[in-house]
Length: 225
Length: 225
DNA sequence: GCAAAAGTGTTGTAGGTACACCCATGC
DNA sequence: GCATGGGTGTACCTACAACACTTTTGC
Image (cartoon, rainbow over all chains, first blue to last red; front, side, top):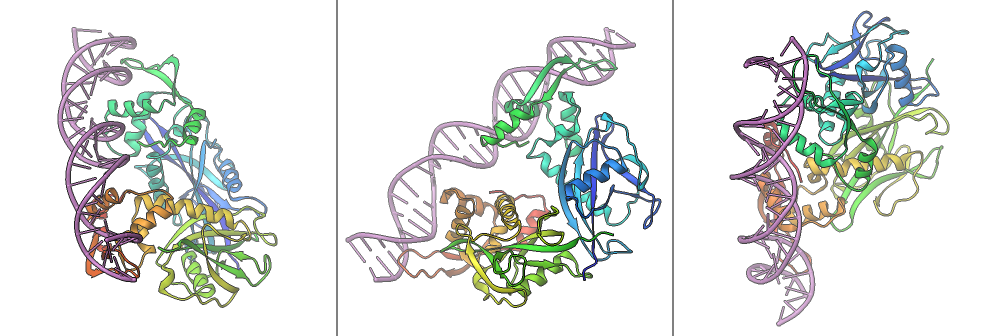
């Protein structure tokens, strides 16, 4: 008789132009690793799909509003949980951190955003999961327009540019980048202007036209950056 | 108390220049879906890693010699197995079908290669898994040299060309293709010549230099086709 | 000598990269 | 008026796509 438990874990990415990429972690309320920081997640219920389990856990533990969710990889080495055998199906999610406030409840003492450059030690094999998520995010940014899921509904062009530069960790030529993005034609000018709180020329606020993107995609076009 | 079982399933791809892409299926010995064709796979043991479980199951059920193995995706909808809740971690594998003979034993009545164009109805949600494997294989062919894992140790250039043409389902310009592949410099000429059994000019037999590829890759080069 | 398979170069073009100055705003 | 941030065009060059005839072999 098999006795393996099934869990889900999520790497929740947020982004703020001022700060860069952040990851949502919870402080564990129960052993093992009680009091340590870990990825949000937990056991799957008997009659619940994997996707539903992630969404439930995220809501319970952190209160985030998920913008994009994708399965990442499954981890099942026999010793990854020191007490029981647990196979974890990991996910990664993209959210807009300032579109809601964190509200930890069951299972978690605390939920908090950490800058990707400044993470605490993580419980279990979560460092490996996080690294895999990071690789996937970087790769996917190159061939699907998921960056928009991290930005506000409307955003100035410079936010998009900063996002790519910071997540891919390389310099971006503004003119070439803009040329490319504009050639796709799925950015809508809302007509409004950005409000800067310092000096500087305000740029127009843009919107990502998801519908148009899916039309383009369906007619055999492919995003690449 | 959670009662979910954990299984692994594998989509095993083979390739023969004469026939094209094939998939290895087994005929199930036990219910559910007794007597139906399905992907090889089975329950993970309590103290066994996921990778080890796939390798064991493939050996037990089919006797294949695996050349390349990669985790694909995990499927966990509550109703995917009509009797118990089973979460399946799926894999895909690349093998050389003529490097060994199939030897089904436990759990399987029979193991057999099917042409990808001519598959029987599959048990469970295996059609979905297969489709996902197919997408991944096609995508991966474009940015990693995994095609070689499907060819014999030494092969004529035309086999490689046919492989790409058939798996990606499109015409390939021989001259452009060759130019590109040769520019990478990881094909070794063994000095021997192909033996055709009809008329035609025999080409040289080549070998994929894996070590050189990994060197190139490590020094920041990227395969693309 | 003919049918089958493999080998071989050139040219046009699209897209990527590199690069520097002007404009709007806040203080 | 100056500091800050946003906006804009051109020239070079590389890389991909298109394309047809010759060579070697078996029968």
